[in-house]
Length: 99
Image (tube, rainbow, N blue to C red; front, side, top):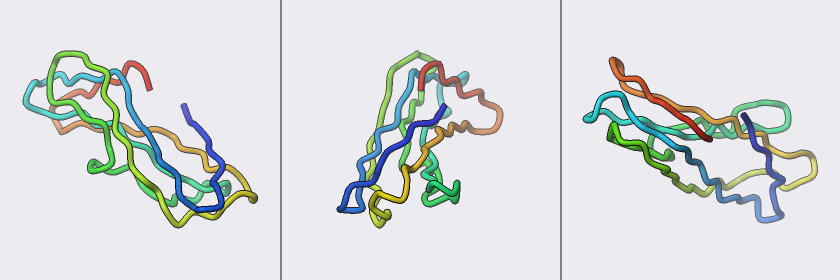
């Protein structure tokens, strides 16, 4: 799955990431973030835990987070595709049902 956006003249966008998440181990976290890539598929901003929706529970929940991305080139040239990324700690399975 990927979403795309066209950068406004300000060169800034507010990105919202989220999903229906849970962890297989209650004391471990599951994260959902996004890579921001330009139209040439060059990574502009990598997915990172401090820019992620997260859950620290085996209970299922819809979680989200927002972060501001600045310094982008206003359109044209082209939209930025944003593929999602998720992670979990070793020994734990992160489950993402809906992105």
